[in-house]
Length: 335
Image 1: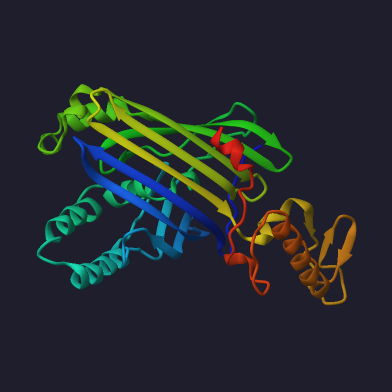
Image 2: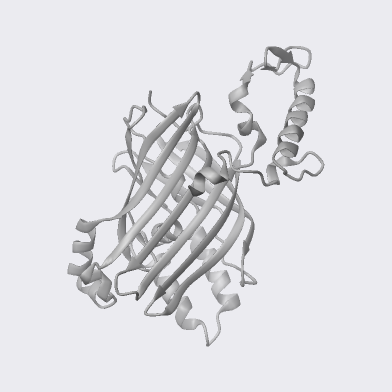
């Protein structure tokens, strides 16, 4: 079977937690601890998919006013099989407002470096997004791929920042259980891209010793649970460790992402009859039909049962912004 992600008229909500620390020669170059809620939506434009991300309730430890770009629109170009942000005009405007408000004589150099990365380096914004946020699991290329166990699936190729290490991402379908597909993935250094980088004179001026020696190891684990019928992620776990053999280079990154949209939590148990008349069946669940009004009450009841079972706090029947347990057991993720 071929997996096709569905377009939607409404966003799907995900909750995430992320940790990242990077050091080189005992100097801290990255330290991120963040959490929040992602709104994800897919549109179709001229036969190309448009992925729209909007970050809600974002918190970054130790930062009063973290820099957030909303919304960010990605396009998948079928011809070139690449995801990219075609227009950065709105993003640049948001950056200018932030820079004008928070730039000082002490941080002006940091602002210039970040601006160069995001807007003056080819695909710099895209690479920074994959390297510093929980977005990578969304970008999988299922074009002309027949999904079955042991199928290999191409992930994103990108340059990790701030270490500037080119990497490949690969996934394998490890299991299929009814309408849920489980993917295991890993990250490896892109040797060919590294050769091209260190041959570039502009890159040579900022290259580090590890780019030439390549004396570092990459260990990674990526796990994704995905709804086959819709193409949407239920949950994802990402863990990455990079360590130099001389002890001068180290990076650790981990994040968890899970769906908190109740309509998707229960999707596998529900048959939608596509009828909306108040007196006719609107949904069928476990052999019983419900009108639209009846189903609204039943769905809330199911949510409360699910929330109580998994120790999730609920408030006034608004589950879309509430956290929840991972779709898969967290112990399994960490094993």
